[in-house]
Image 1 (tube, one colour):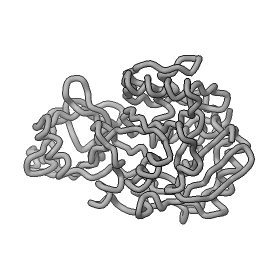
Image 2: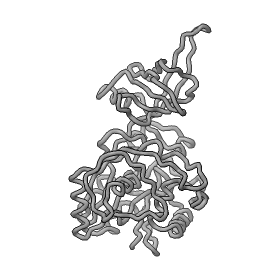
Image 3: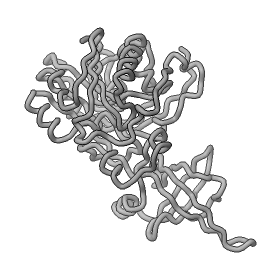
Image 4: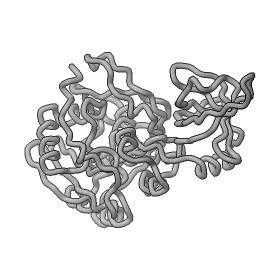
Length: 351
């Protein structure tokens, strides 16, 4: 399949730079095989059945965007360079992989000062990234990072405005628990206490899984033939308790509905061909494109995605390419807000 098959024109004015307030007041497009309804996220329970189970990602986004200074004492005297760092992944040896800009301004062994108490030594560089060894670990590191770092907003928002203090609340789900993501599972940003209470009252169950969303989720697809694209890997966990709950829901006739593509990718990785699921932990690089056979997912709540993105390919696989084009055409004409802080859709391929 060609990358151009997943392209569409999106007016810049439909890119959301701030979320709806309250969260559950965001718009919700509900799409089945034929019909399209419009509602708010708070109305989600009315489109679900008692006994359905929402699968949500409880990863917690770290303030991974850091700005620091490299100081070098050389033959020409003391020189300084401003260095921007975006943390990507923790390494087994305690270091962090990070994007550094400009990378050419640092050398192995040099120290970057990010705050009065937080520094990092450059341990090695390769292919635009660097390994950083921070001077703090554990709770001390978390506290210093929280004070010095900013939320790593997606590039399409950063192009319109810079991250600020409000994003530390806005770009985090209400159930964020497992620290490790550098991007939010954004379909979950529509949930607040009011929506959670409405779901409980309607008899909808909630199960938590963990997939640490990486910066690779923002990487563009650069190949014309999508089969040549290499998907980024992300670390995830499905507990035995979560698997047991999903299997019980399926056995009882309820639907499994991931909230967000991250939750979908994890449960489709962990599920057996017959749709049963067991405890699972590891890294997944599953790449879902049209023709994929979904094993456990019955419906999907998700935001509206970028043209030519892997997520656009995923929803095309889930609803069918022609149907997803109809849904996105409707969303654009009706001025739904797109991307991470935008509105939501509930996709129901079987109605």
